[in-house]
Image (cartoon, rainbow, N blue to C red):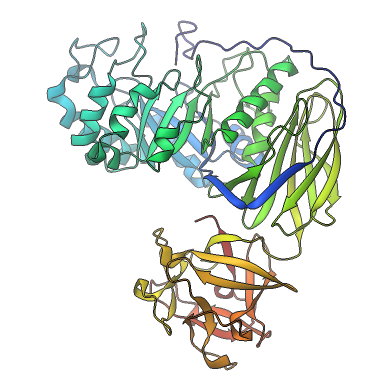
Length: 543
């Protein structure tokens, strides 16, 4: 974040001039392969730093209408945390997560005794970790950053770090923060600020997310972070002028699309300060949404946390860019047309199950407008993308579940289908358990045709099986070698909200059921007659 005015703190503006693009001729098909997973999406968000307490109307528009799922707050060095505590509480009430970022440690911990300029004293590393832990507890943070823009030395609140200093802190102190750690939030996503930490096994183990900003660069694939299993986040950027110039809005749409193609798991806009008149706000205090807000809503509203990016033909024709996602077992596609002419685009969904796709569009004259449904035939549909537009296609009808590897989450408990004790032997009981990411909680679901699927454990290579072809209530559900029996073939019958009844083909009036509607870890999964209970509905989600 850079200084813009005395009272308005932000980053150096990335001004986008209007760009003239030629009309698009018909292009190649955009192939979308739902079986090829890329990164998991953690969400889309914004910052309330220096914005005071956000109004209820503003919060409603941000979280409900636009669908933002991450709030980034400032950790004040003088512990003036009241406003951000209120903002964090409202975010949580809307189902969003909260990232806390310090612009400076307390002045007493720095080598110049001032929140402006200077560096954190090495002797204060432990105290600083404790301070961040206290902030996380007091404000109610889900994630904690070590430092905003450690490679920038502004004439306002800031603190300079080197990559080596961040490595030392992460190796020795970051675990004491007690929350998932985000770092380094470099000004232009400078990998030299995070690579020392990533290349130190101990330090890397104490970091959950590698994050940066897009001021001057950074919208590229950060392979070292991905190689170390870290989710990559963009946590601050903005473009000015989008309130009045739709060319800027389209540049924003392209930036987010590029970030998703570059395997980012989160994209955060700078802030939502009501005092701004340059288009850097997204929603004013009365809840009126500004055009850049709708652009970001095209992503945030329908690509929910826990979704998975899947393989696409990213640039199927001139000026058209496409990303696609698996959301609750269905398909979501975001297509942008940067051109000044309309484009006819065919989409071919491979290994999917969509029969209808509802469209929502933002253009100079539309704002997340419902444009109606497209019928998918043979996995294909073709639409016209208007000039300078962003269109999100959301699966609304299906012929079953798309092939893929999933965690299967029970609707009533939020817990995952699990092979007891991580055992792999025939007869192992299937249970529910809090999801921990183990391969005994991951299941490869593959279509067999005719609406039937096999469900194979990633760890065991064995099938979900109804013991001895039983049909009685309470029959054991277990692991067994896959033998293509009718007790190992299942229908996924959609209920609502991305949940399914899972019914074996030999007993179609019954389903996989959590015994006694229990929410406890270890509760058995059994066969029971279908009663439309929440303990009989399962959500296939990205593992």
